[in-house]
Image 1: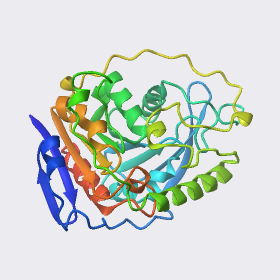
Image 2: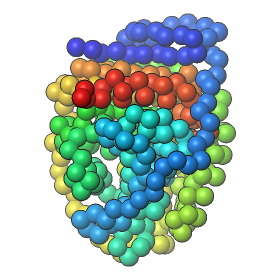
Image 3: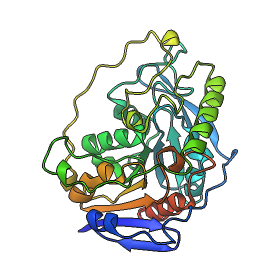
Length: 325
C-alpha cells in the first residue's frame, strides 16, 4: 500500500507525511522558480460529438495509444490542456482527448447556445466514452475538472486506469475530525499570479470570440475556490440555451479506501495543497502528491506558465501505468 507525499522543487525531492513536509525549513533550491513549458500553438485536431440529449460537445485530440481523457477547469476550454503543453507531451505515447464541458467554449445545446452547467457532467464523460467505444482510460482534470474526476471515481471507477487531479483533489468533510488535522498551508502569494490572471483573461476572451459567445469567466470573477465547483463560475445569462438541464442522477458516495488505482495530485504551493489533498493522502491506497513550489492556481496550469515539473510528473505517472501489451 502506497501513501506518498511528494514535495518537489528545482533540484530537491522529499518524501514525507504532509505535516512533516510542510514543516521543512526552506532551502535555496526550494525558492527558485520552476521553468515553464513554452505555450503550444497547434498539433491537435478539433472535433465535435453530439450527445444523447442533442448537446454538441467540442473536443480536441492528439496521439495514439491508451486513451487519456482530460477535463478543463471552470471557465476554461478543452484546448487549455493542449496549449499548455501537458496534453501534447502525453500524446507522444498516448491517445489524448480533452473534452469541453457544458457551459464552456464551443460546446452548445441543440439551439446553438451556451448551456448551464449541471451536477452530472460526469455522465457526459461516460456517454462520450461509450460513443467512442473507449472501455477504459486514464482520467484527469484541473480545478472543476478535478471535481468531475472525483464524481467519476464515485460512479464508475472500473472505467479508469488512473486518476489525476490538477489544482484540485478531494477535501475532508467540513467540520470533521480529519478536517482539523490538515496541516497549515504556506502563506503568501505566488509570484506569477498576476501574470497568470492576465494570460487567463486574454485566452478566455480569445476562446469566447472563437465560440461566438460573450464570456464573463475572467480570472477576476472565477476564483480558485469557485473553480473547484462545476456550477460556481459565472456565465453570460443573456444567451443561454433554452434546452432544459438534464435531471440530476444520484451517484454513490466516494469511498477512496476501495479505489486501488494509482492517483496523482499536482497542486501549487499557494493553492491550498494540503486542504485539497489531505483526504486523498489519508484514504487512497495508491496516492502520490506533487507540490509545485512558488505556484498558485492558474500559474500551475495556464499556457505559457505551466511548469515543466507538472508535465514531467504527469508523463511519468501515465506512462508508468499504461497497460502492458
